[in-house]
Length: 138
Image (cartoon, rainbow, N blue to C red; front, side):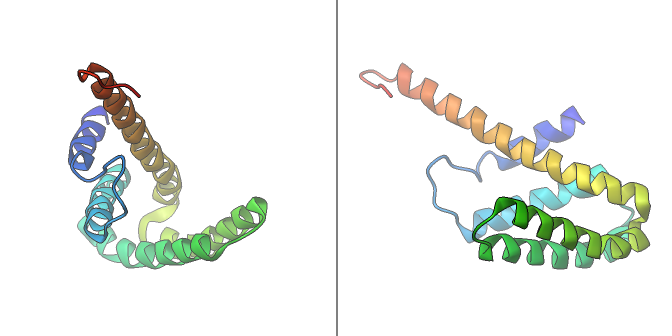
């Protein structure tokens, strides 16, 4: 697990910049790394992956649109996300089984934490570099 996270962080290194505007190429590259991460975490066979990814991509697109369009009550958004996940659960369970579906839910949270940790590490590294620059301060 540690080796996987290190490898993914190395893959993220050139893609996530502290001050960069979102870029379609970066988003695509990060999405590719996420796919590799989830595939590894779920231990998807080629047959499972072939069935899983179209469903996941549709689910992720609906989730992204839901979050983008939402304004207002955070609890309401969480309820909508939960309902969307419940709606897709039978499709996921059919192609990967209930254990891998549960691992998916956990792995999505793990992915968010990996990205968050990497951003924090980069900010700290950036601050340290600024401190070490002659005449540099934060």
